[in-house]
Length: 146
Image 1 (spheres, rainbow, N blue to C red):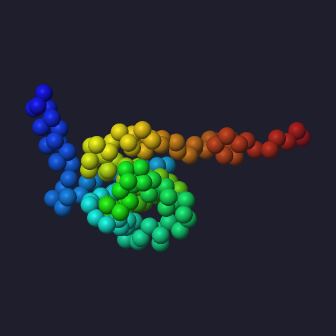
Image 2 (image 1 turned 90 degrees about the vertical axis):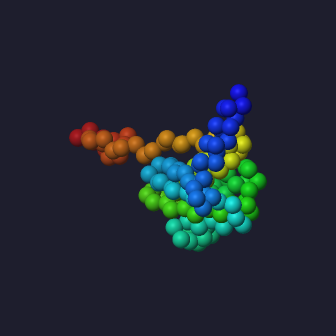
Image 3 (image 1 turned 90 degrees about the horizontal axis):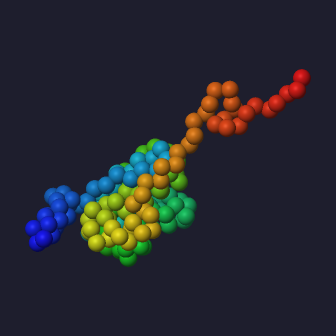
């Protein structure tokens, strides 16, 4: 039994790189976020910009900060992220997913908190494809009797 605990502790330490960072990828719609998380003073850098410059809407800033608020770590982690693909909302969701995964890898004790609110689950909803013979995915062309 003690051997399993020691193995688990070694696995937790192996999730950090040589600089003390944990890495995770988050996805939402067509967006992919690569997130590096480390101890710090609460700086969030997204594609080289601050969170306020990258996401001008406060709602999107709130979405990105949600995992940190849940674990009460707004001012204790520095986050460096690169995001590509999709729109603003999808990118914010991908960042939330990536930050949550990185937090759970950084400290395994945070995993139940994040799992309970659903931040570790990838939202699999994507845009439905357009079908031939239809105007959009489900919308048909206007019917003409004559």
